[in-house]
Amino acid sequence: MPDQHSSLRHEIAAAAARFIADGGLDYASAKRKAAQEVCGGHAPRGMLPDNDEVDDALREHLDLFDEDHAARVQALRRTALTLMSQLQAFSPLVTGAAWKGVAAEHVPLHLQLFPDNPKEVDYWLLERGIDFEVDTIAHLHGRGEATVLGLIWEGTPVMLSLYDPDDRRGALREGARGAPRGDRDALLKRIEADA
Image (cartoon, rainbow, N blue to C red):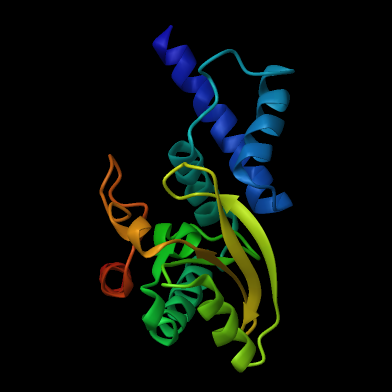
């Protein structure tokens, strides 16, 4: 039975990866749609893959069907390095596609910032004539929501999530797959390892 469950989770993850890569769906929507496709409705309890499993399936899908994937990851990471240098005063961390090395087409660069005052980031952007939209996302520590600024930086869509300086504590704590984010030096190490 465990093999059957594992096979079903893998099949749902592969379908979700396809919906993310080809349709631009977010992870939650892609998993729901994949469960409907694979199971003819909702997946049995505990059968939905976690985001790490979807990441693995997405990496496999992109490596097989997207010849531009590696170049896209490199470009996203180079942009991250440049922007993180510019935003150094706000203690930036990179997360998401650039950090994981899994970048579907049109995926945004996601940086997490820890300013003393969130308005400082607004002023920084306004001083440079950069338009941005304001929204919210789930807080990185799972408590409530955080403000996120959406913008275009040198042709790349960017999300800047804003947190309190105290939220940076524990942000680099490693889980089963390592830390879900990293600073500029850690990103440089990943780039060097992939070279």
